[in-house]
Length: 240
Picture 1 (tube, rainbow, N blue to C red):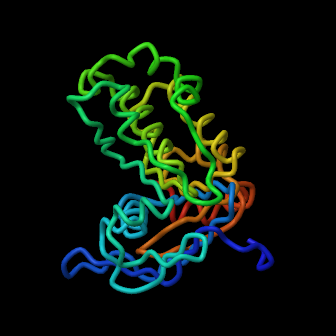
Picture 2: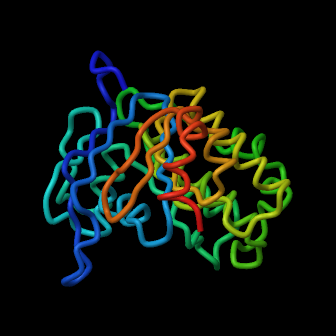
């Protein structure tokens, strides 16, 4: 990103540990308003831990996380959420005994200054299947429906930025396409997105920038076209 652009979300020198295991080793990342930045890399490279450390679910051992100039590192997850940072976990974690409608209402909160305001009808426009299932308990939904619900519930918190971990894992191609369009619409509306995505084609399609992680730090940052042209980088850090 150009130095002239003030990032909305700024991560600088982020370190994190699981016990004695040093997982993040100085992650630095900037995300502008309305950008989609994908974190790519092999399993174990630190992508999901980066999101969890930003969200306060894994306490950072060093480094800064700022959203709109407000320091977040070290704050509890609920305070980070109220500051305008949302999180969609890979595990989905719906409220199984509540209906779709009740899950969505649980996610609603007033927007922070400068955030886009979202509504439940907008969520149903994105995912008509959720509207059909609005009275169904979330525990009875398919995996794809639960993923839709989790994304929508997080977005109804009206965040400035949203962290999304592996949203297309295990989903049918039709639902993958719906999720990709949802992420692109967030960007068009001005929401900043940090995306962990295993499917390279999806990440390249929806992202404004991509970052490749290896051994707990970022080893490449550039446009999707730049990554696509760098065969050596793909082979060294992404090929399985």
